Amino acid sequence: MAMVCELCGKKPSFGNIVSHANNTRRRRWNPNLRRVRAVMDGVRRRARVCTACIRDGKVIKAA
Image (tube, rainbow, N blue to C red; front, side):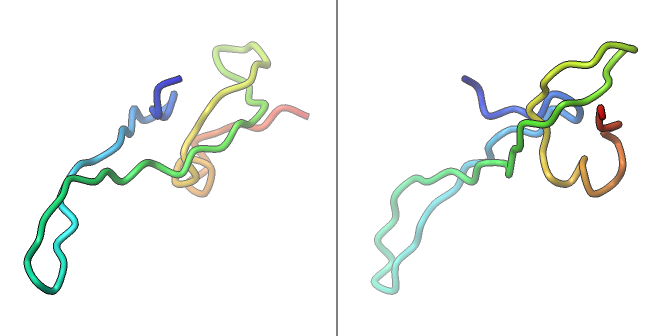
């Protein structure tokens, strides 16, 4: 399953781990996704959304 927020489309970002000896290797930062029951397009369904969208109130939680 892709690590993508269903509301804002936030995806993993990529970069390097750099040690003190300047050895580098690739790494990725994943978005902090949560599964929530949300109302989307008038329908209650499960969605994987990032915590930034939950905090900003972009998600209308289903009761």
